Image (cartoon, rainbow over all chains, first blue to last red; front, side, top):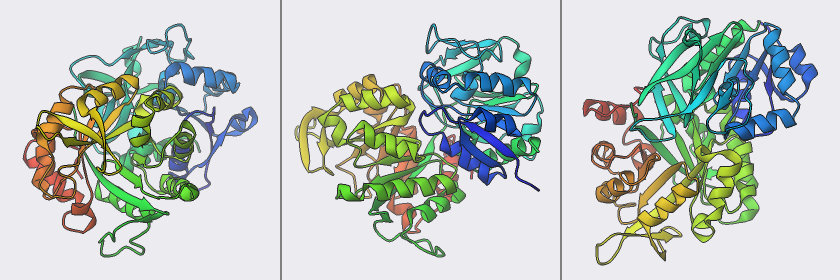
Length: 205
Length: 254
């Protein structure tokens, strides 16, 4: 099997190379890039993200990658957002009022409430609400690693394909046509995370 | 639900693990990357590398270790030791670490916590605190340099300040217990865990697997860190988790 080319969008913030390295381990020719041409040629596109919502959106726009995201999503090629990369796909976040998100998926990103420590910085069980090709070959309740203080609330709850329980049920995975996004870090979720990335890579070939 | 974490800690100097780690079939027991990969396979939830390299000339060696680890190990890892400036944190995080841990440098210049949190987010900043019970028993004092240097700072007050400045996690070591194998200082652990809203990792004194359970159940710790009981082959991560689960601790099974 040839290794599908996957563009991991590099807008110069934090640790983005972990996602690229885990995708390579999962069978992709994954490259960190800010080259729109390479993103156009890629079989799939990944938008990672760590840190604050506003800082990530600013950096994405400064790197001229916003249109690359819209083109990739519109092209119907597989597209994956990870952590803040997932949150950025939403309309806005209470973390950074006044900063527009990408609004690929309608909804907001809210502070995690309840009698729990913030950030949620731990492994947690995924509760699969709707079957998705992303979960192929995974245990019924996979364990994955979360690091976040904010959580996405989609307008259309049908896009939520998996949740985790932390104070209340939080959105863990969303799916909207060719766009899939995880609040947790599959690249840091050991065996189950690599399987999930492998499933994404397989959908890119 | 809150889920506990088991975290082995590796001391690294000049790119090599200090103190022989006693896994039977390792090709190179001194290679931090190979050990980290082994702990990943065993079911460790996270790893901490503590860089105890004395000379700043060898800082790039740690960057290399981090880069190689990030390509081989797919669980989160933290790097502490020698992070004195934002630039140091940037180098370690860009190389692939998930978090940096600051200790002495943050006590000396607390603004460092704000700086790293502002650029990388609070989830990247661990504040490591070495605390020792005061002579009159009224509280705990922050010590530096492996417990040799008193600061006069009250540990609970410093930890509260560190969290306000942007520390997303506290790595709390009891200097009274460190190396004793008598178990965590439960009173200290609980006092800290109950006074801050961020996760707290308990460290210092683990000699038995029961101590790990006690750190979570009695100390209210979010995670438990240990070195020797895992490194010297006395116990596996799986044994630790089995005991924790049997006593009602919620944790990712191996």
